[in-house]
Length: 265
Ligand code: SAM
Image (cartoon, rainbow, N blue to C red):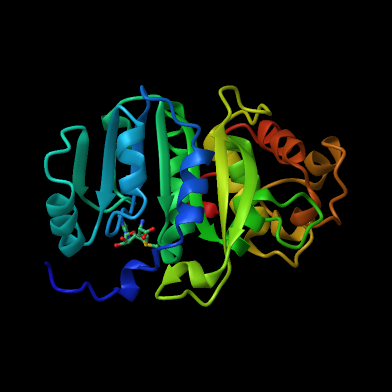
């Protein structure tokens, strides 16, 4: 028996032990035996155990080397399991193939940068199912006008169809997190829902528009987007970014061509 593992805060370790929640996560992936699954942050293998018999190949990416050693022990002999001792934030998911179903009870401290990293691999991803802090799931799914609507909502909804699935209480984890959790399914759009023109311009524009949330667009985009351009997109320059739907950002981005550079965002 290996020594008990002490949960590491810096790796966002809250291990899920609620069997019902584990089953519901697996069910949300809609697996068939031919599927290639990637699990981020397998930890001690709570979810891994249910994924293994349900797919053709399973790759897991875990940063904590102690946990990697445990996983190697626990799942020795499962030839279709590939364990990567790596940082998911740096991981090249495209190197694994395509048609990936990506899943994980994600470390909450890095969930936003991780989601942005994963959006880069949407072309090789069929679907993603993640346990996240409930507040992050609400931000992903928020509509314009909602106070939770922001950069993450616009970028996630540009890349994926966002479906809130269910919430999970802190008691389902050990140690218990201080916040409620929720599971979300992100289904990458094969064709983007709007034409944004130059993608880097769009990214930089959205970042800048939400950079100072309280400011009107006129002020937040001063020096970058002329008021006439804002008006030409049928947007009131006195409006705030949090009221703009995705197609309004797309219109502004197209009007700018490739003139907004990420360094200015
Ligand atoms: N899946 C397990 C479960 O549900 O019990 C563990 C979930 S725990 C919330 C998050 C896991 O992600 C931990 O195992 C942690 O070590 C791992 N992790 C944290 N940061 C990571 C990173 N940058 N790359 C890969 N794994 C990471």
